[in-house]
Image 1 (cartoon, rainbow over the protein chains, first blue to last red):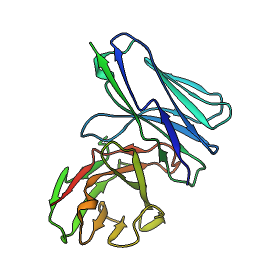
Image 2 (tube, one colour; image 1 turned 90 degrees about the vertical axis):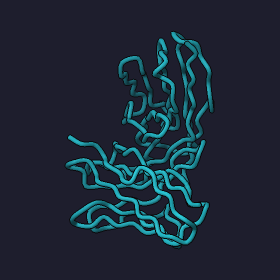
Image 3 (cartoon, rainbow over the protein chains, first blue to last red; image 1 turned 90 degrees about the horizontal axis):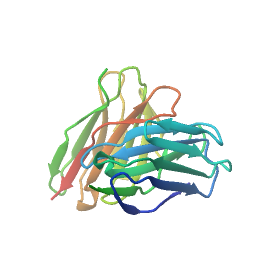
Length: 111
Length: 113
């Protein structure tokens, strides 16, 4: 089945720094979604991307749908302590296939 | 507009017992999905249901696991004769008919003793 590879697995950054993480797949995806999960909670949708090349922002977060349709990245600018959590990429290979998740990037922010 | 509601939040069962996990989708959402998450892992798809129909159960173990989404009431994920390996967080998500954006509940943490 489809697999999503997320990197890095974890990162430690200083408050105020920018963060970048990415997600790649071996097959084409039609939709990319980025979620954040806090401990003991379900994933919360951050950004949804629907077209190759699309660049979308949500506050300090920016995500892009790669031109090849096999990758996506998420940037967080000027990180703050509440950005701590696990960030998951997810994608649909087609409208009828289940949403597939990467293994996540664990972000720690040092104040 | 309430989000996806899951209960219980925590469920403890002894080996061999049955576990029933419930999920009420967001208002207006007719599609329900169940995912399982092990510690330090991503979410693994289990099953996708619409009202009274199982659309895709390709991620469901062949034995002991079943799911339903009746015409009335919540979706139920049922695990019979639980084993220690069933311990995990089980998340339910719902979506509108477009099926593109999934919204997740807070999950049920199942612990099998």
